[in-house]
Amino acid sequence: MVSILNASQMTIRWRLAAVMADREIDYKQLAEMTGFNKVTVSRHKNLREMPDRLEKETLNAYCKALQCEPGELLRYQPDEEPASEAPVAIAS
Image (tube, rainbow, N blue to C red; front, side, top):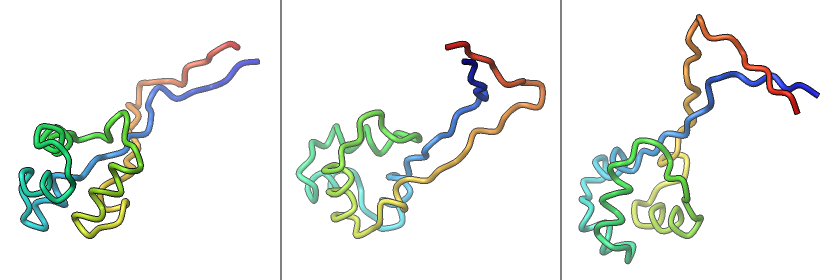
């Protein structure tokens, strides 16, 4: 069996910094509100793509503290496929 996969993959954008800015909350305040370590919140804030391991408890804590929906923190953005790039065939 052969599967055809596009070389580009979807990207889930992580918008924690934007939501924090909208609500005028800095990472120290968010750390206090969530009970997370300041370093953890700072690292999450500086990410542009969804964290590799985003547990539902973490997402829930951010949503509760920021009074937002998960969709405000996560946005689907398909990668643009370069015109010269052809699909890749994978044999299984």
